[in-house]
Structure formats: C-alpha cells, structure tokens
Image (tube, rainbow, N blue to C red):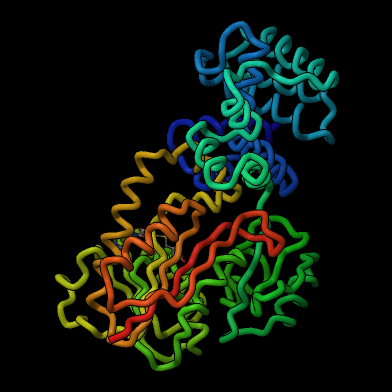
Length: 434
Ligand SMILES: C[S@@+](CC[C@H](N)C(=O)[O-])C[C@H]1O[C@@H](n2cnc3c(N)ncnc32)[C@H](O)[C@@H]1O
C-alpha cells in the first residue's frame, strides 16, 4: 500500500513540474519503505510516467470523463492502477483494484471510490479479452498512443526512420534502462570492483568495446551505498556516454576544455584517461550543476580538474587569455535528450519542437563560442545524447560549411536499442587544419 501511495505522490509531483528523479528521491526520504517497496514504487511510478499517453487513451475509452478533464488526483490514481493491470502481470488484478480503491478512500476521493472500482474492473475485462482502445483519430496518432509518445515525436521518428524502425525505437523508450558503471582506473581495477560487488550479491558483466565499463545484471538499493562508490572506485555512466571521452584522444599533460561539463561524467572520464596528468577546465553555466561536478571529481580523487562557472557561448570575453590555447575541446552540448527517453521517464512530456529549435540555436552558438579557444591543429569533439539529425549531423554539416579551416574526421550515431545496448548518442570528431 505504502509503495503505491509513494508512486501516486511521485506522479502528482512530476505533473506539478518536478523531475521524476527528484520526486522519487523526495518520496523515499518522506516514507520509510523497504528496498522491495522502493523498487515497486519506482517501477509503478516510472512506468506510469512513460506510459502516460497510453494510459490516458484507456481512461478516454473506459470512463465517462476523458483523461484530460479528470481531476488530476483521480487521473494519476487511474494511471497507477491501469499501469499495474496492463504492464505488471505478476500483480494479481484483485490486489490492484483493492489497493486503488483503498487509496481513493484514504485520500479525499472516497466519493469516487466506486468510479475507481468500476473503471479498473472494466479495464481488466478489456485486457483479458485482448481488446484495444479506440480513441486515436488516425494512424499517426494511433502510433503515438500505442508507444506512448507525443504526436510530434511520432511524426519525427517516422520521418527519420520509417514506420517499422520507428516502432522498434519507440519500444526502447518504454524499457527499463540498464545500469552501467565506469571503473576509475586511477583507483581500482575492473576485476576487483566486480568481486567486491559480487560479495554483496550485485552481479555484473564486462561490456564489449567498453574497457572500463561494467554492466549491472542484478542489484538493487541506493547505488551510493554499494561498495567502492564512496571510495571513488567507480561512477555510474551509461556505456554510450563512456564512448565519448576516448574520442578526444587526450594525452597526459595537455590542456583540455570541457565547455558544458556538469555534472562531470565525461570531464572526470577524461581525467582518468589522462592518468590525471594535465589541466582540464570544466566549464558550465549552471553553478549548482558545477557544484556536483566538483564533488564527483573530489570523490574520484582527481586533481587535474579545474572549474569555472561561465557561459561558453561567450567564453573568450570572460577568459581572453584562453585564445587559441586548448589542445582539445569537448562540447557535450545541451540537447533534446531523445536518446535517453527510457532513462528519463518524464522527458518526452517536457520536450517540444519549440524547445528543440531553441536548443539548435544554442548548440551552434556554443560551437562558434568555443572555436576561438582551440589551438591550431587541435581537436573538437561535439556530442549529444539525442537522435535528432538537426542537432547532430545536420548541425555539424551546417557548422562546417562556415569553417574551411575545420575538417570532419569522423562522426557516428548510436541508436537506442542497438545490439551494443545503451542510450542513443551522437559524436563528431572535428580537427583544426591550421
Ligand atoms: C549534456 S549536459 C553535459 C553533461 C556532461 N558533459 C557530463 O558528461 O556529465 C549539458 C550541460 O550544458 C550546460 N549548459 C547549457 N548552456 C550552457 C552555456 N551557454 N554555457 C555553458 N554550459 C551550458 C548545462 O548546464 C548542462 O550541464
């Protein structure tokens, strides 16, 4: 009961604008839940947030009042009940109805308990009969409803990849993401970390083409309490994100700029690859996020990182002595994050075409802003965690069309759901010819 209550509260907070990660953290601080209950609450909350559109379609088909006209508290209660019915076979449907009705009674929805009971029972009947909802107006909307993504994203995905591949991609947005770690080679070796984790029942495997990565096969609870975290032996970092820093080919002793560095996943990776010898400047616009970069770096015991809060579109104005100084620059740009929709359940509902168009302009301004700081013969790596060509290869080709002095060495797009696993990521390696 407590876990469903926490899940319901998380949905309400996210609807009020909180990030799901923050809402989950807050709920777990407020309620004294066992590790098992936390896992259940997380599964129900994150799943219901991902499936928001799909579940709304069911409310539209089952209830007298459409989802968007329901009182929000009731809409989110329907969501957690319907999510369990449609996606969690292991929970007996009678338990779903009973707990949902009890929640309604406890939380000022007593009058509506019979509606909750009726809608959920009707849903069980439809689900058992294998029926589909019927609210979508056309094929595109039906695609969006079935995969629970906004209509604009359905339209874009189909335009980029065609309906079949778009469907496979959209499926990955609704999966529970894997957890990967990056072992800090300055502090530990892979086998030792694996052994220490296994001693407390956390199983892991190595990851192909990701030399210091470990994939967590089974393990639960607060990762920050797992052995080796406090000691700085590893960081949590998806395998696709671990692919980026090595593309810089940074050598010990070099001067490196990470222009959008917070919370420091790639900056700390760079320091580890450079055996912590050299000078890395981790710059970010957000001082709170930069603070997290500092504490990550100090937990990992790294000394080569320096920190600066600044706007990287105008970095030269703030740091004129940095002109033409950096051997290598990483621009891990702010982006739509469409490669990480499984990991960030609420992101698809926050993002929009208008926001993406603002991001595209910012990315170009950042590329132009860092360029004067690059040494002649230096290298820029531009990366994003999106699959949107306008933020990736199209962005880079229009940038390069303005700069004869630059050459594209290589670029690649990792799609979510590829056989290597991991988030969707893009990177371009750009070398200065002068
Ligand atoms: C994709 S995140 C970076 C992730 C980071 N590289 C890592 O691996 O942990 C993008 C970052 O860009 C920062 N940012 C956005 N606009 C910026 C600007 N104009 N100047 C500097 N940083 C900016 C955001 O605060 C955010 O931390």
